[in-house]
Image 1 (cartoon, each protein chain N blue to C red):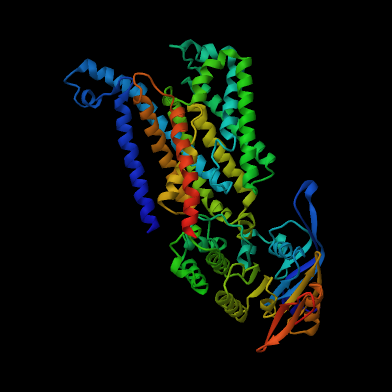
Image 2: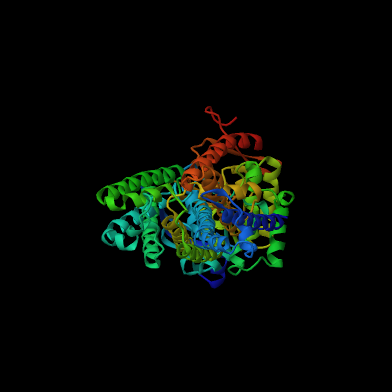
Length: 358
Length: 269
């Protein structure tokens, strides 16, 4: 019966994502508009159709797919983090990996400083520098690589500070400390290289506005790799939920598999952060939403958390575009507000549920 | 020593030393333990708090780093491939689970991991093993509930089922009676006796001395060392138990069963 619920939820997520994608294509800086009509019946207004095609193909479609892919990466990273650290509060942000990824991006921008003009500085327009959102493949790969290295180092630092994953409180505390320290270092780097400050500002708030096809392709590829790796390692997470020693006694190679899972976590987080900046709480909320609907093993859980993450960020992105149109909210601000509210509700509900269970 | 005598030992520990913690907080817990546990029998390990019982059980299970050697069915445990060891030896620890979101069925099925190829779906044999383990611990009726919805004693029965589902030749259990009410304690006793009848070697760390005295053999531990190892019916074993608890327990026979009772400060009643 659980398999039935999993299948039902996968179906609902796919349907939701498709519906939101259509909506995402229709919502732009002027709010909701029906671009489907000129697209579907070009004979009415050939010029309007060409414009609509350009808007949809070059801006809205990559942005919509990018929002889904970034959300899917964050949802997956959140489910992996909660499984590998056996902690329902673990998420890419609370463990410092996102802070590490953004420090990596800031450092890369500072180092690239001279060439930033060539790479994207020339695209500065209306007060927003897009160098960090350049669609050049090499820039994208470079930023993703820097974000990945930053994320791995940050997680390792968190683990070193908390001396392992055994103590929940110490782990979270270490994650917070690492997040704050790396955040401060990011600001320091930006202070020292003011050229990248403007670009980083949009980035730090989290935005899907500048996601192009290169970024979409990169995120889709990394999502595929991470999802397959997570699926292959799902049994280790199931075993680990009974404790390290039990997992060892079941013959699972715990240490190398945990390292591989941390790599998956860092790669997924780093890739999402490098393309869309800091988007909070999607990674935390997605696995919890799945668990509130279906109790399942880590294989289906991670897949579903990823699909839910995609739907969440896509929905948030459309809201961010439409809410105060023609202006646009950075989607990271919206997810922080919504996700923070959800976390508070979760904490509020926690004791009540525990009381009901006894 | 003859080969037959060797084959009668399921688990052998020689000069085992182990520590807990790391860095500056590292504390030596086992100080050179040597012990042979007889195959096809039930051995209970008892001793005061901090004697090193759980640590010894972890070392015997091959899940804690140590010096000295541990042999499982005649092979050094660290030379065995992990999965082979996991099929031969099952270990039930204390309160380490965070699997609140897994269903009872999924938790018990984890016991079959050593038998399953990577990514292969559970076989008919896996299903049968899980069902019989859940029925043996009366957890079958909740197989669709999540672990988080169960009480402490109910969870303990599910975790026991997980260990039983391995169907290993050697079963190590650390405080398996924690949170179990008296009827389920006697159910547990029946499960262990059935396992031993089938030739399984059972080793349990127990605080309930009266339950421990149902075992074939008793190992008495204090301060990281084995102070006595003998048959549970042996008066010398009873004396060793009384000694290790500073004469603060007395062992009586009631209805043909050995029962350990705490002494009040004035001596036995």
